[in-house]
Image (spheres, rainbow, N blue to C red):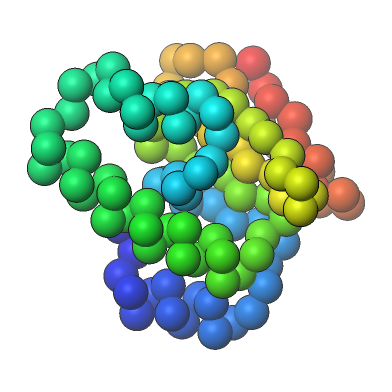
Length: 115
């Protein structure tokens, strides 16, 4: 989990092209939001609260640095979305799942899964 000081310092640095974190943001991809609503891994309340706090910080970071491409793991749910703003979110699967790794093409920041 990032600290508030780390988020503040990162945001002070200005916009970024790519943001890579472990945690997701609030309002990310559809599949990740479904996992958060349904809790299929049956995380206890302490783990859920830790994730909520972490997501609030990462969401603040996301809003402050306005990345074109945001990549995260944590929820082990492969998905991607392009928002109306043109920003893209990629959620990685876990080890041994398909779509747990990919390539960022630096010319246009396109994302390609490696299956």
